[in-house]
Length: 482
Image 1 (cartoon, rainbow, N blue to C red):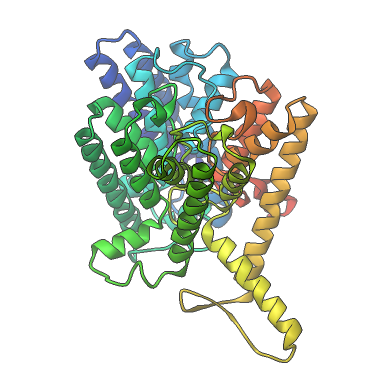
Image 2: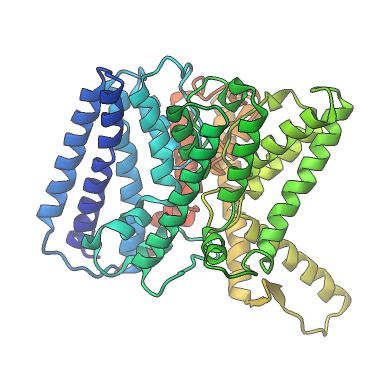
């Protein structure tokens, strides 16, 4: 592996990340807040480090191998967490470095798990930075770099696949840089559309921008202590629900639909299952909430059901009600949706609907073979044959995902975290959801988790965002051999 090559790319991406800190600095100046200096100092430190790396390895090769791609992506996300925590540290937002890092990692990985006990007393600059980390991490630091920085050179596909290692890391355009630009254009379009819609619903501009960043990135950080619940607005809830569902759909499908490919949505089996799960879970939740008379009439029951189902399956994590008070059946359904997650190619987390679809198709296939052992049948998704290598990859990924979940849950319970908080907290951070149940529920947070537990959950957030392989492959001895 060529170290100079990796240092050069790391340096250029770190410099670009440092430039994003000018946005909250500007917000702080607009609102005449003193913490503008914290963002300026964070900007200087990040830029100095990035420029130093880039200049040291300026003459490095511009080719990137697969192994180098995995290392670059891992280090970029790790450095983003460290430097992104500087504004929190310099403004004394948190009392410990661990909490500052936890909040930053949660933002960048679009998890939305917070250790911020009170939110509304924080400055506009801090709240904007908190939301911006969502928006940057939603589509991906590497993908943004590929779209904007020609300095990275060739080999971008290795970085793309390392950061988006799902079953289908689609190239919409022949050149990976063009693909990155297209995806970011769709991302920006959805963000702007939601900002306008929220403004018409009565939300102020600052809150509209922050909540749109969090929605389209499926992050979940709010500017209010009680999240969307604090607005008590049906219009806001319906708008956010709609955009959460859109954000959970493969962005490549959005692009194809916008370019007048009429059957982009209708021919996609993963999308049908994704929407089917939302409809089914919403219907069940509405019926149960109405039967238990938690919110009165049918409309209010539907209103809270559709919002919370959309929030959990897309792994956004907004709350419009304290769903920890809901009947056990609905809480179980929400936990299961945490594992399923959104579609591949979206900003959502979880296992991804495509993997769940392939898994169940394979289960059916095996049952069919027991009945007809001589039959020659294949697994199809979106009218395409899924080869055995992909099926094997999906099943191994699900096994690895569950192994991380079990190991992290056991570790948290060993730290005296109660089982429900530990299990749902791990599921929520690994899936990028944010709130779990019990102590880490909709009206709680992760502040009471022990320090070691927070580091474990940071690992879960990184593993979930980078889809496990990118992280755990570094632990395989063969990766480091020549």
